[in-house]
Image (cartoon, rainbow, N blue to C red):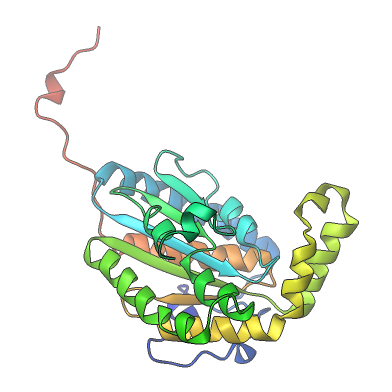
Length: 271
């Protein structure tokens, strides 16, 4: 049965309720982890082909936005889903705490500076959405200010789409218990200690507030041209399959073609 990515999409105008979405579910995939890993190898190969085509054609731009709670699997997703792609045409932009230079400008400035050019696939590891997520939960700006940013973001993304960018937005949905296990593993396993940050515990203490912030942000900014997908992400192997399917089906819809060869190549002789 074909993988149905619409099952994971947040319909424009709908109200997302994360409590109604099982983070351990595996929609559109009936196999187990072993079957999932085999399927991912096939998907990796297909994604490599499509990304080569994207880079060669130099016509389309693809922006892949990934958001999650701490320990949600953003880095792991990038590592496994994009394994083997051509680094010439793929870049990752990570959005940490804003610098003084960034704070001196509008909040979308640093995001706009990183959007893809023709032929590129750019991954936003966190993104401009932090300005309606962390900023809201931690009360870094007044409510009136962050509330009006939803419209800014919708308009910003629509402008990118109108100018030739395809946008895919992913939320990795994990349970609070799963986050606890992953954070504990960072403490228990020496080779993961470097990933543990005390600040993650503070964010965890705001779990419910972050869930509400994600629900509002996704509900208010999922559009036909710039949709959000909520990925059940407790099972990492399923997470990787689902995201690969979304990427591949989206890239295939662009109907890309390799550029025409230069005239006279059939007469070229290399001594």
